[in-house]
Length: 632
Image (cartoon, rainbow, N blue to C red; front, side, top):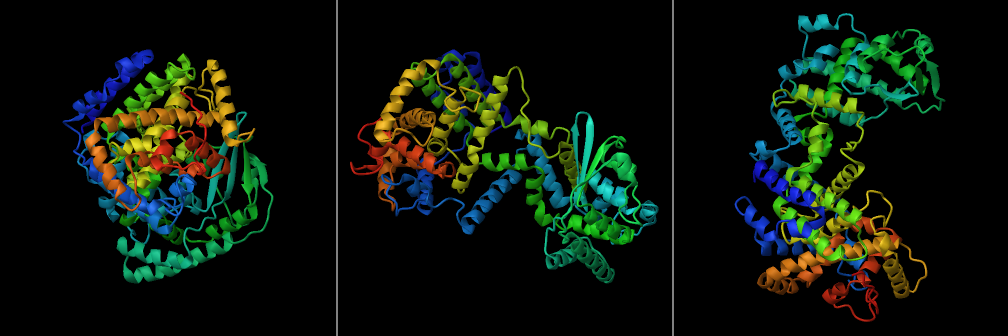
């Protein structure tokens, strides 16, 4: 499907929602119209095969020792998706397959700019990583190069006059902390710099020795020369680790910048701090700025050790250490590390049928207007906010998250030189402070907050992705696994605050009191272990999602009858009705781990007549309630 097609369809849907929020039911295109529009671009999917394949997967996840009408949480969530090493590795394998599919697709014109940059970064990692390309990188030249592979006259001239701090500063400037870390805080127009030893040891000494050999082999270091360099590097690494092992307790030491420069890190240690801070911060510190040192004695020992090390040995060690986890076999790990939100977006959404997902949102939106607007639960403000959420979720589904483009907008990248790309993205992340993205408030707070709620909903696809093997998320699996979660988010987005029940109308207090009395009688407890607003939200969401699911079933009666027959003959003896409840809980297993949340789930199931019918619960079963508390 082309990006132009997705954007046109998205614009059509969203304009309907936003231009007429009070008459959504009358204006959203019908499912049939959307399906007709999508027919030319959507892939053909064998619904029967997809549903049966999913039911076979459930045999690995469902705990058949538990009875659904007694302990539905145990039945569905007793074997979590990531409970074993084998299942975790299977999930990583599925991520790899989805990422490989993204890389191999010939659809660059359809990608977000951030997705294209991720693809170019990965391609450069695989194909543009020669020694000559390493030598062309800015950081290589700035630091003085790697003596093991470069003894040219030009590079020898560059090294002349450099100090160990010049080398370390070149890496720090690019966002790569070697030997010590630097953190800056600004309060009341006063800058405070925090310095402490970088004491992370990524590998064992034996593994480090092995990786040194692999780096030498990849970059063509002369064998005879390499033996001597390896001995020097291992000695350096061993001595560095001895310093880092020192666990002597010390109080932090605090200076103003003038006193800090005059402080002593050892008789032989001479450091041009003005030059260092100008290089890494872009300006020198003011005399009144503060410097706080954590474990100064350990830092002093490290500085003295570096002062006594030859520049050649330091450069050999630092380049070997820098390159040892950046081989061609690490490309996906590096892509995930430096483009984490983009990689996650790709893996989560590579299997989603965008048009069918938009149809599902549209249908739930229509059910919301048909069912909730005439009730006392929703007022006009809630309705407007929920419509904003619906429009935003459709836009994110059809067009992707443009905020990813904004995050990587300043990053100029190509597929021509891996090392330049690596420097650029590391420097960009260092400048951002690796902070979480902030929502830009456009127009008013409601739009911005609704955008964030929609972005939060999209994380649903993390758990859904873990459940599906090679399958795409198409109808009816999307209804089983996403429908109810979407309906919950849509209703809750009626308020942009985190307060439970803030989305409810002020006119609903009478109905809410009736619901409370009913649930208390049902549970036999005066105090509920969960917030009743959460139960109300789940029951309303179930009503909307189940209504759209049943409409799909009514339109596909012959197929549903055949699937019910085939599912009933399987080992789990399932049905399409059972799959709805299993799917809606399976994606939320992690949310039901506490005692209170398990009781919430129990209250939700006890008040669902169709759950009891689907699983044929008996009068004595724990999830069979004598009275059902109705919310609509």
